[in-house]
Length: 583
Image: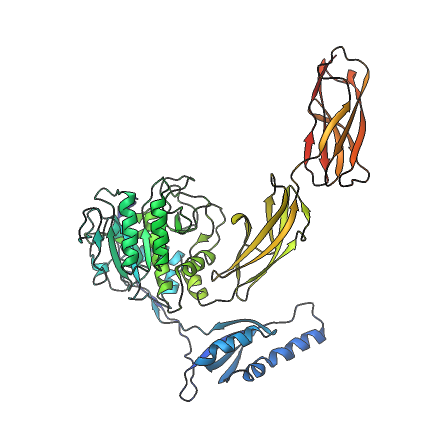
């Protein structure tokens, strides 16, 4: 889609920050790696004996590990210890440590690199890369030249910021190999994702060294047929794209696009798409295709830009206004979900080139689960966080989840509170409650309580809890409950007939009700107000509850509407047909 563009006059950014990490030592002839081992500490209320026992166990962690692998060296940290082991024994050491009850977590002793502030003229205006902590991620990586980002758009022009990294593409609008940009949109998209950084030119894109594969599917007016877009997606996947960015949208769903996305995923490409700029909740495509990572636009205050589309079909958000280098080399502010999407595509490319093997599904999961939760609920996950995602990617240990409530085979109804217990060696990102593969509730803060409106479901129902950690690893737990969303059967067995006239004095209404799970109470409702209640002394499943209500007709108007309703033990209700009487 066409995004807003505004020209800026920019000055140079200056300053710097240096972060260092100690290199790992090596044993004779064998490289060594350093692991950080977090240790469990006594609870504040633990007994002295218990605290001593834990302390003793902690002291033995390294000793127990030395029985399993060759420990090169160890050194204490606050609530942790660094352990160096031969590189070829790192996996075995990690597994042994994670199985030790005294160990809280295990992670590599990551190495950071000098992180000078890029000298690109537009960098000082790039609040988005700081908000998403892309600038922090650059301390670890600037990307990899082996990673290819396909820009399926209006084409890409070879600006100074993209020098030497634009591959030979294809033009499906004119059916030739000249994928130059005759609109300007695709060039801006490519710049946000992959402009070179710290080259004193333009801006600093997210992935400084990634290759850009231009695929022209939109004409000079920024419009294109679904058929060309589908061909472009497939072509990009066939020509080595690791990430495919689609800063375009339409309001119609399409099996053709769905099939193209499925094909690309099968070829190992992650598809990222803009949610659209209509400020509406209705689904836009291809972003709303479930296999696509859909991106909305967030502000510097982490709120939604009013023009960004939103809803549960939007997965993540990214800054919606970003500087980029235009076709003529000038720096402009590029706004829209068209700008948000390539920022996410660029972060995905950083993950793909980080050296940790990861499938498109894994990268998508990490980007989603590591996103920063926003205070509003206009999207599913949150605003992307590159540094958190990058740090979480190596984590392949699944979290754990179980039901606290309701009990197995419990009878439930109305709004059901599902309690969950979720733990992870690093951090839990989100707990979801699913019914028939559909998310019906989620929670991000312990203690996890997920509320589900069970009506109109009845009978045995299997609930699924799914937990994600920050690295996108997931685990599930299942529980079958018995749902009752139907009220008791209730009838009036004796009372003046409907439309009785000249009614006088005291009249009696006798009613009975039954329910498979027991009747809790009967109520008499006159003219919409409850005038009498009868609580069943001992509700029993399947039993019949009876009561006779007394109606003092002179206390009501010239006409009155009389109704009896019954509640079961779960609060479900049903009413007998109303009767209207006239005085």
